Length: 236
Image (cartoon, rainbow, N blue to C red; front, side, top):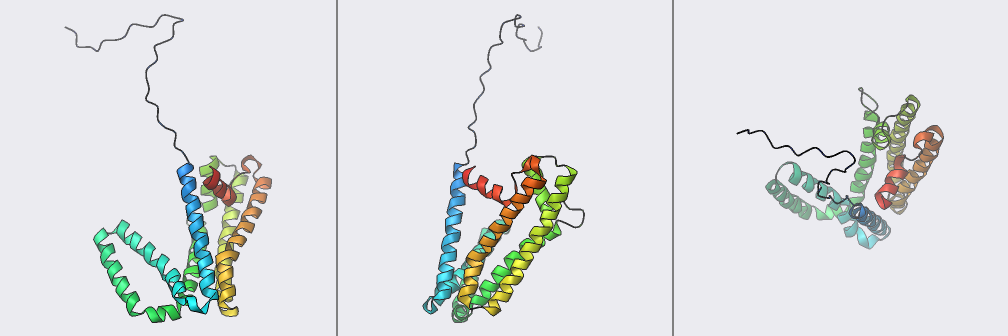
């Protein structure tokens, strides 16, 4: 007796083969992703408004201290939870809670310095990330993004995305310096207005300039950059 697998008879010419049922898979939807982006945007706006209020009202220093400390503590605990162990995160939360409680008065009276460190540190790290990708044989960040969105690039397009990476690195470095200078040169309310709203306006202006240059210098891939990322995140 032959143990070879039984083969189906050949299909006559001109006759379609019987369809093989294939289980349909649902196409991934971007509505959930858009919802998360909208929620994140609402949280950022609420944080900015509350931060500006705390900087404008002498009676809201406690709120300012919470807004200054809260994000750092939450991000730190999340990273410990994710990278080390849940028990370590719980123990660290207890320790941080005790330290904050013990030094709350000092934190409340000097929370602006925490805001300064956060703002300068965040933009300086972004600038360093852009600049670091330009050295050591690495692929510039803007080039990585363009390749991911459009595939193979021409030599001119690679040259432009490298220059764009330089421009964004310089922009974020100058932004960090401006935040530091304005902290000492202007009232805290004006400084808070700049870091919570002015910085996003400047990023939008630079993004529009990048988009205009991209349309002129990269006509094959006119869509790209920060504006395209925002648009795709919001409307798919």
